[in-house]
Image: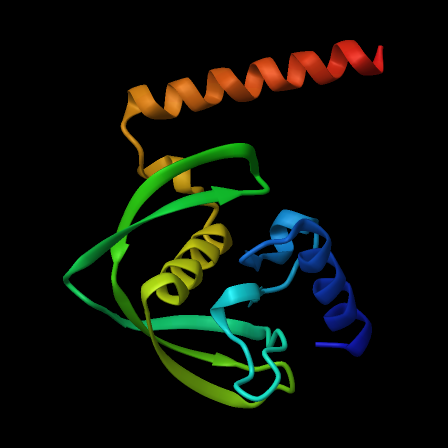
Length: 152
């Protein structure tokens, strides 16, 4: 991962105030994502300490689920409560290309799974019932039409 690409990711996520960002969402093609904001902070100064996951692989997921409200740049302005395994064990390469493993839980586990779904072409709305997904799709369609009226 080049320094310029790492800088691009850092600024992209910062601009959107994300919990995490995935390059396919921002039109980059590599298997990597970054988590940031409240998920990881350095103890001493409370600074943001983003984590980069290159070629991540989930080794194990817990059988117990937890529920968090999720949203996504791919589905702007829409949010839904999603059940996911509450813990996951992931191996990946870090920012500098070093092999790492992490046992994540809570919101971090949810973000990792959410971003890894993107790598497989899955969105959080794909976990919803047909009815809930349909409602969100109609809202997105209305948003698009409203934007097109402004542009035209």
